[in-house]
Length: 295
Image (cartoon, rainbow, N blue to C red; front, side):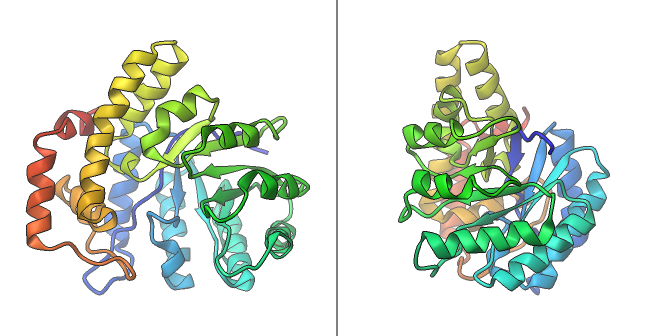
């Protein structure tokens, strides 16, 4: 099994005006992020709006990212779906396309741990000896209790923990052996997750300022916690501003401003107004945005 670690963008998905995957821009985005020295790409997750897209478009996203990366970085495909059949179809496609592993959210409307366990077990059995990671996002589940069940799956190699409870995350880190990898999924918590032993970070704002999070983790590794905290606080001001106007469309607008036209957001996300757009970019000018995107 491969070892996963480092700074990974939760890849944003560029759309055309008709809300289809914009393949040329997606290729440019992959190159942009490779030039920024990211360690891998998490494709089709929440930030990538994958759960809302047709299966064919989700497959196209993975094919394009893997093809453009040409083995220079690892690609993990998020295959989560309410339908286990769709998730298995996506996982088999990701494996055949050359992805390094697959991940899935805890699909909504599954009534209990037993049904969730069977979902992940079916996914693992379908792809055989291929890395599987859990995307822990739902606050209504006891993440530690669920992972205690899921670690029985032989090909489970870790997961993405998107939550603020660092004690809970550390308990999940401690469950693993060997090539176990647990990423933090909240950009706002990167410094604290690194201090608690997270193997890396997967996040939305990593699409445009991966260097900040790399420096945060490097500063923690060197014991310079004050520098790491300072970077985190400054980065969070950017994230907070984006959240205030609507995070997903704000992310698309930010990427477009950097020369990567990502189009609009996909339902259920709604577009931001001209007034909100002005608020966003006027606010960004007062933060360290320009400095951080250059790192």
